[in-house]
Amino acid sequence: MTSQTTATSRMSLHPPNSGDLITILNIDGGGIRGVIPGVILQYLESELQALDGEEARLADYFDVISGTSTGGLITVMLTAPDQNNRPLYAAKDIVPFYLENSPKIFPQVGGPFAGSIKLLKTLVGPKYDGKYLTNLVKNLLGTTKLSQTLTNVVIPTFDIKNMQPVIFSSFQVPRQPSLDVQLSDICIGTSAAPTYLPAYYFQNGDQEFNLIDGGIAANNPSLVAIGEVTRQVLKADPNFPAITPLDYGRYVLISIGTGTQKHTPKFDAKMAAKWGVLGWLTNQGSTPLIDAFTQASADLVVMHNNVVFEALNSVDNYLRIQDDALTGDLASVDVATKENLDGLVKVGEALLDNPVSRVNTDTGVVEPVPDGGTNREALKRFAKRLSDERRLRESNYSDGGRGTVGFDFRQCRSAMGSAASYRFAAAIVSAGGGNGGPDPRKLRSAASIWLASRNRGGRRQIRQEG
Image 1 (cartoon, one colour):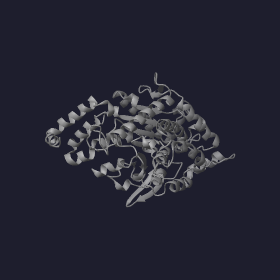
Image 2 (tube, helix red, strand yellow):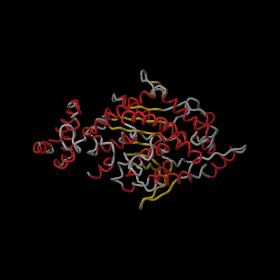
Image 3 (tube, one colour):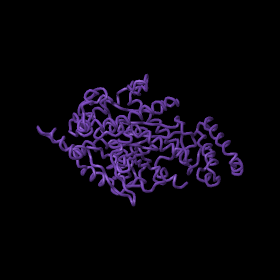
Image 4 (cartoon, one colour):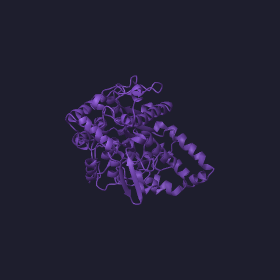
């Protein structure tokens, strides 16, 4: 069981088994449009700081942070440790990072022949050589590895040689040590968007990786993150409470998009019917084929999350923030002019005051949630829940890993031996409910675990230890 605890034992946030919730933050891919979630995350972190002090960081509140492509880069910025074992970047540093470095990652070609030059470069290779991005992340992150992040991370990529996704997950490192690669390699790999940046090859020991942009697999990786947590629950990871995989009342998910151009579409079937390879690969300053793949996967995840959280009566635990009304260069992934980057900052600021919205699963149209307030108000509510959850865990864990009714998780695990008996005790501990006394629902859950285990000797073990 030691291998299962590795992923969460390094966190400044105590593991979910000492609280009520499993908290997940997700950031979509989108190139320079990472400025938009940068603005949103800065506001969320500022609210947490107002509650818990200036040193509060997002990594202190989320059990998992997932991100793809530019979202993967932000994920690493928020979770990689500095020399003091605190996050390398505060959320307020994300936007300045993008404003400074985006023009160097995506240098713009000017002049009357700019369009022809861009087209020619796209035909013979990637538009950008990726050298600045590679040097930047390697200098920033050094040899820091996936196992060293300050909370669990989930970052998808796609292996072009094996033709399958590669998920760099903190949870999988104990089971697959070959995935414990340098964070700089993950950032470069998940950002290697076809036609924009070169595919990325590296080795970790005997394991080879031939990676392209994670958006090919999951541009919105929130479902991948939930899947990773579910795997841990099913494996009876002692860091997680004894819950069923469908207990979405215990999950809190904040998912932040990088914007789309749905309200002002560029193309239609009549236009696309005339395209050949060139038309699908470059058209009106974008790459329709890649855009369609990434947007389709992201939208399916949003619809799935909406349906599941609603069906399981947990809609208040899910917040999706996205702007579907981008226009012109604001919708691009690489037009890194000062004017456009400043415009993306304004988009993020305006998005904070937009109404909380949700996809209508019948029409696919994003609609405001009645009485949902603004995104700013929703983030403030979520910040309070995150702060309360962190304080609850600290309170329940203040006695060296003991819950509110006096059990020591680690001693209980050692003494009882069986996973079923341990999960029974863990459920009893988490049922303590802090200062409010036992939670009847959790006590019922503990009782059901005990009943399931007694035929396997659990009852005898528990009585002996009782």
